[in-house]
Image 1: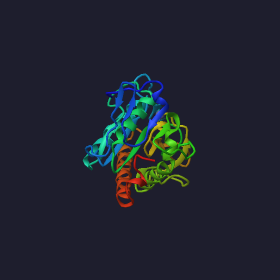
Image 2: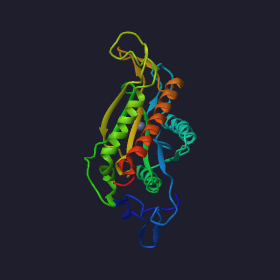
Image 3: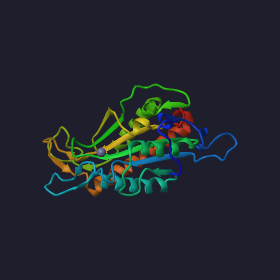
Image 4: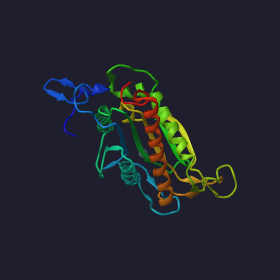
Amino acid sequence: MAWSLSRNARLFALAGGAALSLGNARLGLSQTNGGPAGPRFVVVLDAAHGGEDGGGQVGASGGGTGEAEKTLTLALSVRLRSLLTARGFTVITTREGNVNLTADARAQTANHATASAVGGSACISLHASEAGTGVHIFVSSLAPGGTGRFLPWKTAQSAFIPRSLRLAGTVNSALEHTTVAGGGAIGAAGADSGPIPATLGRAALPGVDSMTCPAVAVEMAPIRGADRRVVTEVTDPEYQTQFVEALASALLAWKTDLETDGPRAGGSQP
Ligand SMILES: [Zn+2]
């Protein structure tokens, strides 16, 4: 990133497109009247963890060593980025390698990238876990609220909660159209193929809580049978393919909805 914010400046997140002057530092967050138009639609992919923060160890239920969550989230981010780029999205990632990143740095990347989007945006934070089954979709637990150009940094996401919930619903719908081994086994005997089970929840999400864009955290967990044993690991290539394809479909549907309803429905401005 070419600029950094002072400690005091971090108290506010700039929603929308104006440039903000802070002492000598002028932060050109572009897309003001008369300037060049920004990208129509921006997707921010945040591969959670990284560097010294490995996250959890995943894919190890069969007795193997599995792999670090930080490695899996980066692989998912890289795959999803190429799927989305091929579909014409402008994609910004918070990291491209095994690096340390603070929650604030992730939010700064997301907010800077989405401020210039003229048609809409979506921010996806990618996680993986050994707990539970299927895909867990989280929206910030902040209460909806907040308007105007300057939003308190730690709770900036509060202005986007309705749109983030709608984005979560779009991801949930896309997962219903997937097929994965064990997906049909929930509540039934056997390990039939079926859609990836999904759950929706709210949580305090450092990073996401400061994002000024419709944002969800999406966590891959193993697919478990009715006996709770793992049928399909998060490291399973076909499961990962179904997961990233579903996210790409969801984002395409999200973009199509915005083009139908107008940019205000899911844009970067509250
Ligand atoms: Zn995680």
